[in-house]
Amino acid sequence: VLAFDNNLLAEIYRPIGRAVIVLDDKLNDIMYTSGEVDMKTNRRVVLGMEEDANSDFKKISIRQQLDRYFEHHRVKMEVLVRSGNEADKHIENVQEILIDLKKLGVMRNEPVLIVGGGVIADIAGFACALFHRNTPYVILATSIVAGIDAGPSPRTCCDGQGYKNAFGAFHPPVMTL
Image (tube, rainbow, N blue to C red; front, side):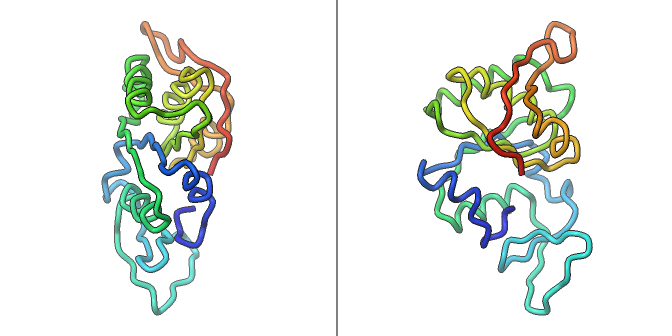
Protein backbone atom coordinates (compact mmCIF):
# COMPACT_ATOMS: atom_id res chain seq x y z
CA VAL A 1 0.00 0.00 0.00
CA LEU A 2 2.83 2.44 0.82
CA ALA A 3 4.99 1.59 -2.18
CA PHE A 4 5.84 4.67 -4.23
CA ASP A 5 4.15 3.23 -7.33
CA ASN A 6 0.84 2.73 -5.48
CA ASN A 7 -1.10 5.97 -5.96
CA LEU A 8 -4.24 4.96 -4.07
CA LEU A 9 -3.74 7.06 -0.92
CA ALA A 10 -2.05 9.87 -2.86
CA GLU A 11 -5.09 10.18 -5.13
CA ILE A 12 -7.38 10.47 -2.12
CA TYR A 13 -5.34 13.09 -0.24
CA ARG A 14 -3.56 15.12 -2.94
CA PRO A 15 -6.72 17.02 -4.01
CA ILE A 16 -7.32 17.96 -0.36
CA GLY A 17 -3.73 19.12 0.05
CA ARG A 18 -3.03 17.08 3.17
CA ALA A 19 -3.62 13.83 4.99
CA VAL A 20 -4.84 14.05 8.58
CA ILE A 21 -3.63 10.81 10.15
CA VAL A 22 -4.49 9.17 13.48
CA LEU A 23 -1.49 6.93 14.12
CA ASP A 24 -0.99 4.17 16.68
CA ASP A 25 1.98 5.24 18.83
CA LYS A 26 3.66 1.83 18.46
CA LEU A 27 4.13 2.50 14.74
CA ASN A 28 6.84 5.06 15.55
CA ASP A 29 8.96 2.19 16.90
CA ILE A 30 11.27 0.38 14.47
CA MET A 31 11.34 -2.65 16.77
CA TYR A 32 7.54 -3.00 16.72
CA THR A 33 7.39 -3.76 13.02
CA SER A 34 9.13 -6.80 11.65
CA GLY A 35 10.60 -6.69 8.20
CA GLU A 36 12.49 -4.17 6.15
CA VAL A 37 11.63 -1.64 3.46
CA ASP A 38 13.23 -1.34 0.05
CA MET A 39 14.45 2.27 0.14
CA LYS A 40 14.12 2.63 -3.65
CA THR A 41 10.47 1.55 -3.87
CA ASN A 42 9.21 2.03 -0.26
CA ARG A 43 7.87 -1.52 -0.45
CA ARG A 44 7.88 -3.48 2.82
CA VAL A 45 9.36 -6.98 2.63
CA VAL A 46 6.80 -9.69 3.21
CA LEU A 47 7.14 -13.45 3.52
CA GLY A 48 7.79 -15.05 0.14
CA MET A 49 8.78 -11.80 -1.57
CA GLU A 50 11.55 -12.18 -4.13
CA GLU A 51 14.56 -10.02 -3.48
CA ASP A 52 16.04 -7.98 -6.29
CA ALA A 53 19.82 -7.67 -6.31
CA ASN A 54 19.42 -3.90 -6.82
CA SER A 55 17.29 -3.47 -3.71
CA ASP A 56 18.45 -1.41 -0.76
CA PHE A 57 16.69 -2.80 2.34
CA LYS A 58 16.59 -0.96 5.66
CA LYS A 59 14.64 -1.43 8.83
CA ILE A 60 12.36 1.60 9.28
CA SER A 61 9.15 2.17 11.20
CA ILE A 62 5.73 2.30 9.60
CA ARG A 63 5.64 6.01 10.54
CA GLN A 64 8.86 6.56 8.58
CA GLN A 65 7.41 4.60 5.67
CA LEU A 66 4.28 6.81 5.77
CA ASP A 67 6.44 9.94 5.85
CA ARG A 68 8.39 8.74 2.81
CA TYR A 69 5.20 7.80 0.91
CA PHE A 70 3.43 11.13 1.38
CA GLU A 71 6.62 13.14 0.81
CA HIS A 72 7.17 11.25 -2.47
CA HIS A 73 3.60 12.12 -3.54
CA ARG A 74 3.90 15.72 -2.25
CA VAL A 75 1.09 15.45 0.27
CA LYS A 76 1.43 17.26 3.60
CA MET A 77 0.80 15.14 6.71
CA GLU A 78 -0.88 16.21 9.96
CA VAL A 79 -0.28 13.33 12.40
CA LEU A 80 -2.16 12.69 15.65
CA VAL A 81 -0.33 10.01 17.62
CA ARG A 82 -2.49 8.02 20.03
CA SER A 83 -2.02 4.93 22.17
CA GLY A 84 -3.44 1.80 20.63
CA ASN A 85 -3.49 -0.15 23.88
CA GLU A 86 -6.72 -1.71 25.10
CA ALA A 87 -6.36 0.21 28.40
CA ASP A 88 -6.59 3.49 26.45
CA LYS A 89 -9.83 2.70 24.62
CA HIS A 90 -11.87 5.18 26.64
CA ILE A 91 -14.13 8.14 25.91
CA GLU A 92 -11.48 10.67 27.01
CA ASN A 93 -9.20 9.60 24.13
CA VAL A 94 -12.09 9.94 21.68
CA GLN A 95 -12.68 13.47 23.01
CA GLU A 96 -8.97 14.32 22.56
CA ILE A 97 -9.14 13.19 18.93
CA LEU A 98 -12.28 15.32 18.40
CA ILE A 99 -10.54 18.38 19.84
CA ASP A 100 -7.49 17.81 17.61
CA LEU A 101 -9.65 17.35 14.48
CA LYS A 102 -11.34 20.68 15.28
CA LYS A 103 -7.98 22.42 15.86
CA LEU A 104 -6.75 21.14 12.49
CA GLY A 105 -9.89 22.40 10.77
CA VAL A 106 -10.85 19.03 9.31
CA MET A 107 -13.73 19.56 6.89
CA ARG A 108 -16.94 17.53 6.89
CA ASN A 109 -16.03 15.57 3.74
CA GLU A 110 -12.28 15.28 4.39
CA PRO A 111 -11.40 11.62 4.97
CA VAL A 112 -9.21 11.00 8.01
CA LEU A 113 -6.56 8.29 7.59
CA ILE A 114 -6.46 5.89 10.55
CA VAL A 115 -3.29 3.80 10.76
CA GLY A 116 -2.99 1.07 13.35
CA GLY A 117 -4.68 -1.86 14.99
CA GLY A 118 -8.14 -2.58 16.34
CA VAL A 119 -8.17 -0.10 19.24
CA ILE A 120 -7.11 2.83 17.05
CA ALA A 121 -9.67 1.77 14.43
CA ASP A 122 -12.39 1.72 17.10
CA ILE A 123 -11.66 5.02 18.87
CA ALA A 124 -10.65 7.09 15.85
CA GLY A 125 -13.53 5.65 13.81
CA PHE A 126 -15.91 6.59 16.62
CA ALA A 127 -14.43 10.11 16.73
CA CYS A 128 -15.05 10.39 12.97
CA ALA A 129 -18.65 9.22 13.49
CA LEU A 130 -19.17 12.06 15.96
CA PHE A 131 -17.16 14.78 14.17
CA HIS A 132 -19.40 16.82 11.86
CA ARG A 133 -21.91 13.97 12.17
CA ASN A 134 -20.04 11.34 10.11
CA THR A 135 -16.66 12.47 8.83
CA PRO A 136 -15.39 9.81 6.38
CA TYR A 137 -12.28 7.80 7.19
CA VAL A 138 -9.89 5.32 5.60
CA ILE A 139 -8.24 2.57 7.62
CA LEU A 140 -4.74 1.32 6.92
CA ALA A 141 -4.80 -1.79 9.10
CA THR A 142 -1.56 -2.90 10.71
CA SER A 143 -2.92 -5.92 12.59
CA ILE A 144 -5.09 -8.93 11.86
CA VAL A 145 -7.80 -7.59 14.19
CA ALA A 146 -7.93 -4.26 12.38
CA GLY A 147 -7.86 -5.92 8.97
CA ILE A 148 -10.68 -8.40 9.47
CA ASP A 149 -12.70 -7.13 12.43
CA ALA A 150 -12.43 -3.49 13.49
CA GLY A 151 -11.31 -2.17 10.09
CA PRO A 152 -14.08 -3.22 7.74
CA SER A 153 -16.76 -3.25 10.44
CA PRO A 154 -19.39 -0.52 10.62
CA ARG A 155 -19.17 -0.65 14.43
CA THR A 156 -17.00 1.96 16.10
CA CYS A 157 -16.79 2.27 19.87
CA CYS A 158 -14.96 3.04 23.07
CA ASP A 159 -15.14 2.05 26.71
CA GLY A 160 -16.70 4.28 29.32
CA GLN A 161 -17.91 4.38 32.90
CA GLY A 162 -16.29 1.03 33.59
CA TYR A 163 -18.02 -0.78 30.71
CA LYS A 164 -16.45 -2.26 27.59
CA ASN A 165 -17.70 -0.72 24.34
CA ALA A 166 -20.20 1.44 26.28
CA PHE A 167 -20.35 4.14 23.59
CA GLY A 168 -20.47 3.57 19.87
CA ALA A 169 -21.92 4.24 16.48
CA PHE A 170 -22.43 2.48 13.18
CA HIS A 171 -20.02 4.31 10.87
CA PRO A 172 -18.04 2.13 8.41
CA PRO A 173 -14.81 3.30 6.81
CA VAL A 174 -14.98 4.39 3.18
CA MET A 175 -12.01 2.08 2.57
CA THR A 176 -9.98 -0.50 4.49
CA LEU A 177 -6.46 -1.33 3.32
